[in-house]
Picture 1 (tube, rainbow, N blue to C red):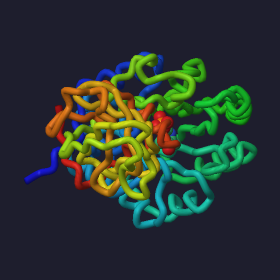
Picture 2 (cartoon, protein in one colour):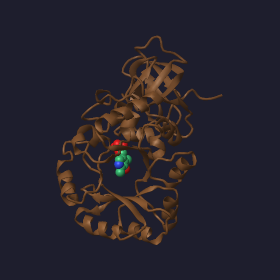
Picture 3 (cartoon, rainbow, N blue to C red):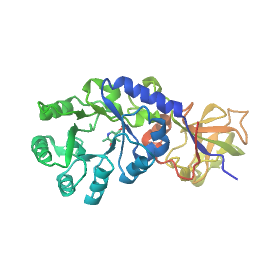
Length: 357
Ligand SMILES: *Cc1c(COP(=O)(O)O)cnc(C)c1O
């Protein structure tokens, strides 16, 4: 007996969303970012769906990169955090991976290997995120040391903007990045989804869309996914497995967090935090029952949650429920739960069956 919960991944939506990225990218080539199991959508599934459209795939884990190569992907693959050991650098070179170099140790790893062919390098510069990357002021001397290494092939300069998705934007860090890289004549890689959608004029030669491919808005406070022309790729659905009729003053769920002001019909949904639904989603988080929008009630349990079906008289045991996806943007659910769609998608639990539609 299977529980009724499942995640449906719509191939046509991922392809459509890639088309939106392509339209914003001008002449830039596109890395489809498929880190974290393609944001929960399935590494090999998304690689296959975008195999003919993407110019390459960007991810973190070298094991995932090798899985792609073993499955026949012969396009460029970029390791977004580069390599962590000489052995991995050697393997990356042998399998034709491109590597980010963001700190001096990684220059030493390159110097230590003897690859059959030079390794394409993405030299990562820190434009203000203060996470990964060399200071902009060191761009030229790191470049010099990379150029002295026969192990290094093409070099692309890369940065990742900290505030492409909020009011501040990218003008100031972009100006500093441009100044640091001026006159070097090297290809650039600048844009994540937010940069691509909001500041396509930033340009660059390789853009790196992630969340938009899956139909999440990279800046939900500024623009909904629908207004950006994006379609939801993942629909998390389930059904009602029980109905409770409660009177005024009764409570729902652990801790009795929700107290009914009047009589209510409560639908119990087969979906809980062990499926990846956020436990901190409060009463009032939007949910679709029998195609109608309503609200969750009380605390999310491990395997179940409750929805108000008082105003959906036709709803009963077996009625379809959408937790997020088609008809209910993941961004709205995420916002109610104090997070972002990225986290909802990545948290989808392995126990949830995933089907491709
Ligand atoms: C994850 C990531 C991206 C994609 O970001 P989105 O906001 O999902 O588009 C791009 N570049 C780097 C370096 C990343 O780590």
